[in-house]
Amino acid sequence: MEALRLEGIGKRYGRKPILEGVSLAVRPGEVYALAGPNGSGKTTLIRLVTGLAFPSQGRALILGEDVHKTPAARRHLGVVVEAPAAFYPYLTGRENLRLSAYLTGVKEEARVSEVLARLKLLAVADQKVEGYSLGQRQRLGLAAAILHRPKVLVLDEPTSGLDPEGVDLVHGLLRELAREGVAVLLSTHHLQEVSRYAHKVGILGGGRLLDEVALGGREVYRLEAHPLEGALALLKTLPQVASARLQGGAILFEGDQEAALKALVREGYRVRALFPQGFDLMAYYQERVKHA
Amino acid sequence: MLRLFFFELFKLFRLRSVRLGLLFAFLLPFLWALAPGLKEVYGLVLASGWQVVALSLLAGMEFLFPFLVMMAASESIGGEVAQGTLKSLLLRPLPRTLLLLAKLQALLLYPFVLLGASFLGGMLAGLPHGLGPFFGGTGLGEGGFAGTGLLTPAMALKELLKAHLLAGAVLLPLASLALLYGTLFLSTTAGALAAVATLLLMRLLVAFPALTPFLLTTYLDLHLRPEAASLGLSLLLIYTLGFALLAALVFERQDL
Image 1: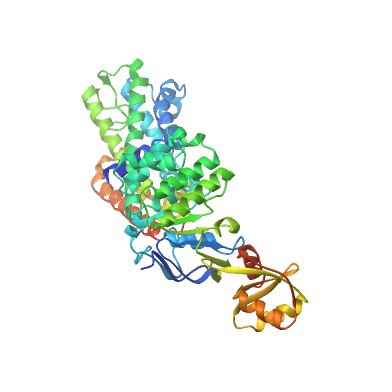
Image 2: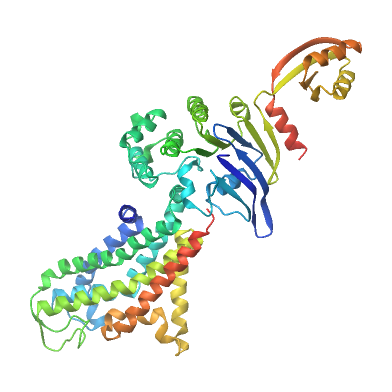
């Protein structure tokens, strides 16, 4: 069963649609990154998924339970929706987490210290949150989100306001949690960073899910050949090549490199270089959003 | 649930409007005890410390206490929205109604604490005038401040306690009303102002005599008319529960 499933979810304010018919699924252990320009509906989608806002259409299921009809479904959910995460400023970090623990039914006191240590916050744990830096608050938000060992983690811009060390810490933690079987849905503008460990990227634009890109095992090759346009046209005719496009003075293609090389040589093209290049998510995203 | 209630109570007494309100309620009697124009305004020459307690209640209930209670109720939601912590609360696996109920319970206690602060301040401010038997009245019983003869401390205390409890009951639906607007507008100022505007509008409805016995505003001076307590208290309770129910319905489907 999918840990998180959205079925045609949408939101409109009056007659203005903000989000329309978004369907997606995140399996346990999968990291799903939501990308899209400002105003594309990422935050609205996160609010709908977490039950903070109510959909005009469709539904959001967490481990099979409708989050809007069954508040108890949120026992499986860990969330960071604000940047920086909001806490009672007159309480210490530890006290805020104790409160979260109480509200989510966590009884072990040791768990509070454990997550504080995991987010490297032990040194400031007993200071009032009003004195925390932006990054410390954001990390405390993540600590609160994972405190009750959720099965689904939903994060809106989790690295916003963090220094490079904090960004690494968060990405490392998310990777680790995914390995432990937690389903992660996060919105981000930092595609290059999340493409290193995300399994899927959903591209939102104009309130719609424009595309879903599965990143796992996606191999892209860079070809430098002469004449370039002819080589591109040839690659596009080959059934073994899934996609091919120009980038700079080269062709990027997905598919069988052996078959592509054989065809190019057979047709008399001069091949200068052919080597694997990681899937360029950013370029793909920019192209997808541009043509939306 | 009990822990949630205590947590809401703790948060309520951290609110700026509540802290200031309690301070004002406590200090106001000292101001009244020294006010030079009491005779001109109320026709009163202070004869006893008990009259300071009553005077503080009468003055406070005209506008200050209702406003403070409505402000606190509205801020209990609006403050959390502004701080961003309401979202964190609603993300927990608890029904929204339960969270609102805990807030409401804490808010319904606040009027009595506020009046308690005023009572205590009144007693302390009244000490120089003495708290023994005196010829006159508390202003809350028969004969007003002039009274009907000798008033013993026990009788004065009873009259004052009764009036304070009735005044507390009067403030309950106001807290509930402001909470309703707080959930609707998710803003402290908008919630409090809407509650004040509703009261002002209700006052205008006195032009419809058939409605008057059922209006909330008809009973805002219940502490001065204990004889109307039976119908008044029932209506105040109905208003409190009605506003709370509406608040729960609004909050249950409110987007954040």
